Length: 153
Length: 113
Image (cartoon, rainbow over all chains, first blue to last red; front, side, top):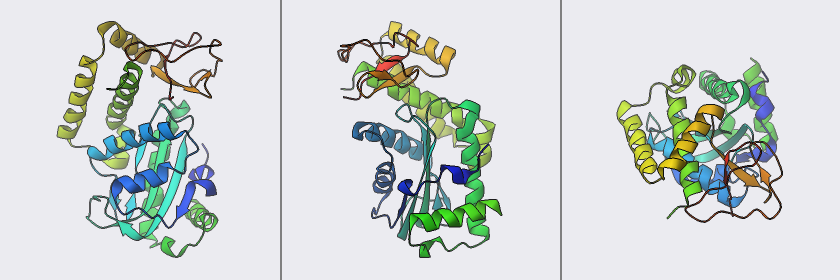
């Protein structure tokens, strides 16, 4: 199976998220997907429903919002960075600075969704362990390069 | 009030979410979600099911069992997102209490507009 970095596309990376709250961040991330507006609303509902089960803010400034949805035709990873940080009800109560949004269609061959969710979690662990300075990154391309090399370590 | 096809779409999302929450690979990544919260999601599912006519709910369940999904969306106005078959010319979104199925794969179609 391909590396997580294969899912990273500069068009789906935003440095400098503007949103100040959970719903705003989810909306800003979903907006980076090339799907019709109404479908974005449906996806947003599914993501919010997942957050109601418990925040996907895993602590140390990282969140991994995720959902399957019929309005998605493939597995997509969207990454957003907030310099100021957003209150995302993270497990440690700290603001979240980097978001990995993973979305997938209802069925995906080989359960790629669950496997890639695990890979995102592994990458998050590496970010924390290596104290990666992603906040000083200035462009989507630079962030992808940083995360790709981290994944390979 | 949501249309029947929208309710089925949401029901599918809830079912998939419940399935993932119980998958060992998911639990390994995110830990076990609080049982009370899973119960609340199951309650929401029951409430939604109660709003769906029995024959349509049975169809939904049999499609989920057969294909692992029951609802597809119509893309570009005339294509099923599940099998990518072109839908019959002139196909229209159903009334709020009706559904339309793809004539090739049989999935329930959700028209986004």
